[in-house]
Length: 251
Ligand SMILES: NC(=O)c1ccc[n+]([C@@H]2O[C@H](COP(=O)([O-])OP(=O)(O)OC[C@H]3O[C@@H](n4cnc5c(N)ncnc54)[C@H](OP(=O)(O)O)[C@@H]3O)[C@@H](O)[C@H]2O)c1
Image (cartoon, helix red, strand yellow):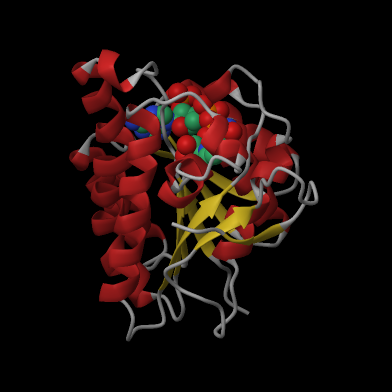
């Protein structure tokens, strides 16, 4: 049987590390993308110590040359890519929309939006060579315009801010557009909602573990041939709903 080759960006910690760990536990060769070599090598070692076949790949998603160098290396080593998890993101520049710092907003978009496009386009030739590739864009329920404008939703109760939530709304449309372009191919493209997860991104204020946060990405990365494409799918956070429910979310 051929091994599944999976690249996870921002795999050195948080939900990305857990996604790499869980894909490795399912037998995939996990390519752990990280922008910092020391952190990347530490993650590679931790994944290998846990029994995964893991390799560190230098990858700063804001640097198109870095994305292309990673793609060239994967091409030389494996000749194809079965799974791409666009997980890397930052959350800076919160605060009321009227107080938005445009430099912080640009920084967020460089990573969370333009970085995803750069990495996806660098990897697409390799993904097209795989028999049934899966692309997972790690998005968020805070990018759901439907939930944000619903006062009955816990998301509707969150303070208003622009940079991070709107970057995820953009990522949702980007997901839908790649799914549309690739509709007649075996490649499936979906957006994952990890749920509110305790990581460095939110100073560990989330109520889900990183292992739980990775579940939506792993599910979408391992969809069978009948699985959906062009969905936002993952943890469902409702005012009175069950705590651990999963399913499609409204855009
Ligand atoms: N935590 C939540 O509640 C939550 C909820 C919904 C969605 N998400 C999404 O889940 C994903 C993972 O977030 P997390 O909570 O695990 O955050 P995290 O612990 O802060 O991890 C973010 C990862 O992204 C990497 N990264 C940032 N900028 C990068 C760049 N330019 N190039 C390469 N890697 C870069 C970080 O690397 P460094 O260590 O080098 O900084 C780190 O590995 C993100 O897409 C986030 O938006 C999180």
